[in-house]
Amino acid sequence: MLLYVSMLSTILVNPDDPKTSHLRQFDGAHTRLQLLKADLTAFDSIQSAVSGCDCVFHPASPVTDDPVEMVDPSLQGTLNVLNATLQAGVQRVVMTLSIGEVAMDPHRDPNVVVDESCCSNLDYCKETKNWYCYGKAAVEQAA
Image (cartoon, rainbow, N blue to C red; front, side):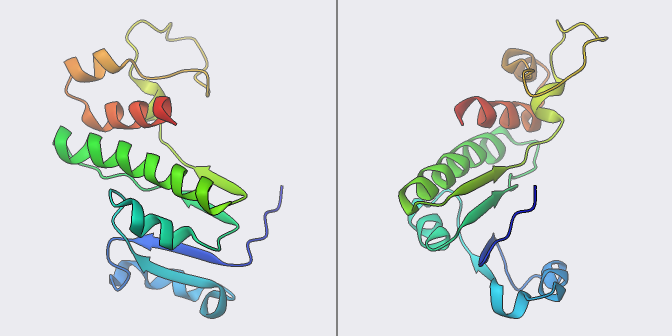
């Protein structure tokens, strides 16, 4: 499926970070791409960023071994993005997750093909202190 987006806003912690310079090199970026600074845990900043967008891609998640810095911002940020896009009438939201969302289940048969019906076991993630996988699985379940 080919998706045409008339305007794309990308929300970054720091839009002036040199690591994002490649985004400005895409065809049409100078007229159709906005790099915005926003705090995913602040609903108002997300709401203003998604206003007028046709589609929102939400790949963001903090990556840290600290459960306070990983889980709550990831979960609250995703809920803010989903609620803001719903209120703004955004037509499509694309959430990207990782293998962390489905990998951590000690009870799953190792021969089972992992797909979208699988989910990491939250208790097991807590026991093993795998906060990245816990956060990814918690976000998927909340969404």
